[in-house]
Image 1 (tube, rainbow, N blue to C red):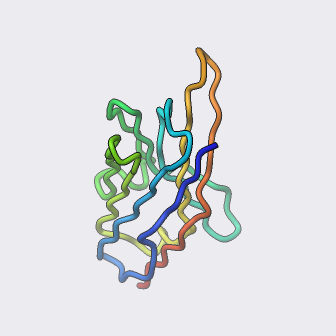
Image 2 (cartoon, one colour):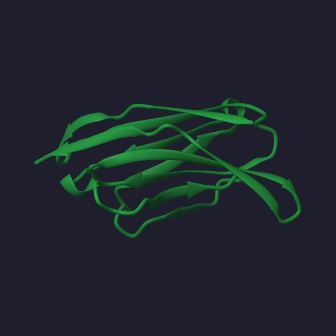
Image 3 (spheres, rainbow, N blue to C red):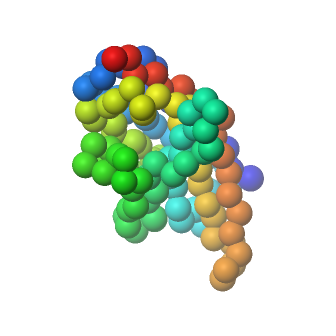
Length: 120
């Protein structure tokens, strides 16, 4: 089992910055993908950014050029630097980790979520 604990959410003004952190603990061996998803009220959960163990990244078009995902594999921690935030970035942000247990066999874990509210 893997436990994920997020931190860093809160209230920020539009145009400001915020940094989210997600620390994994437990059976972390084999974690490959770590990333961030978000869910706004009345909307489906969506990908924000994801990073592989070797640092390959993927971003949602809506955050490209504003958000930066990074990770510290030694600490089993992934970060999301949110810059030039907009009111539409308001959502609960969830951390997700995916372990590679065997070729083509993975499991995934979610954090409890952290609220990010952007005021206009």
